[in-house]
Image 1 (tube, helix red, strand yellow):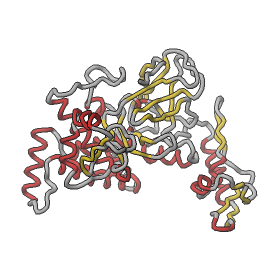
Image 2: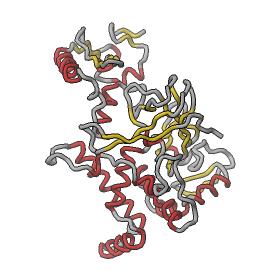
Image 3: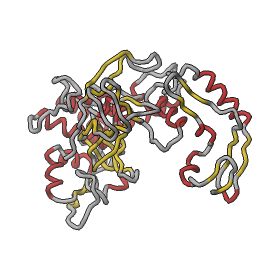
Image 4: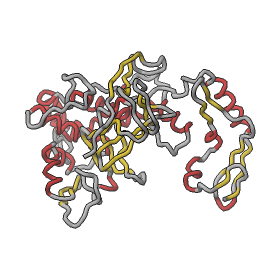
Length: 381
């Protein structure tokens, strides 16, 4: 059984001026951590498989199904009866009943799984777990989820001009209505509008769940849920880990996140001193930094490059370079080569030098699929 070997502490401090919240939490090492040390090992409050692996992987362990698999329903199968019993103990039967008639999106299914576990907590059938000392005693179980920062879907937009935020809120609002309707069995064919409203009202009164509270939960997923993947980067599912959600993002992280099944493990990438903050990358490490930067701005509301004193000058240099770039089509449909010449944006402060060389590529997916391409000469290596 995996276990963290480095004690950690939670710190709280005022958030940066461009952040959409007043304060931010972080995780610091309480003692020296050598490279490779496990600084966090966490199980999810809830986790669900992606649609395309629902029939090939176990909904409880996230392992590939074998001959002894228990085929349960469209929303889940299990590697054996023990795995199914473990899932049932955390509310799988209620979750299955709400997904049988219609299989909702992955984030909506994650919300239903969280709410199913919350029901059992309220009934006293399962313990409201404390998440590795992350929160005070009154923030156990489902309450720990609600203590996390929300994403863009529940933030006010600036005069309705932010099209990305409006689209995110529209999509999340639609999903929240689906979650609430599935919770009260209001998505049956032929059901009348008045009956839908009655069921939603009863749901609010009996379980304190309505489309607005479901929207809040989905918004929390936007900013805190983790994509669960195999060692070879195959994405399997989506999970919410309250303790791991407090690790802050860095463009030069000192820790990495890996998964063993659906167990989340945070490993030190280098030696880390006591008192130093532990950081991870919210984006994929193989993706260009500018892609990750835009993702942080759209999904989390902050510019990770704002800490660099020369950010405005570097952005201006990048814009000039893109405007003057020489674009040429590569042979054999290999894509487009963008030559920025000598004017390439660089971000630096007193301790970190971050070369922005990957901004030179318009189509960064090409670099992933053709790693041997020499981007300077345009010739395949």
